[in-house]
Image (cartoon, rainbow, N blue to C red; front, side, top):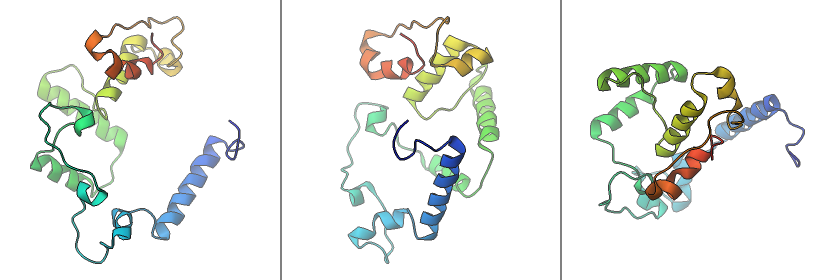
Length: 170
């Protein structure tokens, strides 16, 4: 890597990034309040919405698609998220507990929460390629010597193939 950051190692990067974010926060850094300050909305109670950013809501008649905001949250889910946002927890512990709970609810052997369809495809492909072998898992996206050919339905070829190829497959 060349340029401004070329002499930084990972520890220096994380230390300096943490310092920058701390200073920015102390100086009134990023917040939704500051994001809308240029519009003159600060100082009065404002509900921040897409329209405040100039984004038009749409009617989704197509189904659950990431490009169309995926899906709307039921009220109880939004309330649970708001409650969860009030507490710090160990993310690995939460990840494992939620996976076990979803598996129990669905009768599946295991479950894994992902950020969306693309990340689910990437993680699922990685699991198929590397299995439970820790050495193979660490080598991804270098799939040399592993089964690394994937077949994707023609209909999904261009919408999904990047997520599968990220693992190092063909």
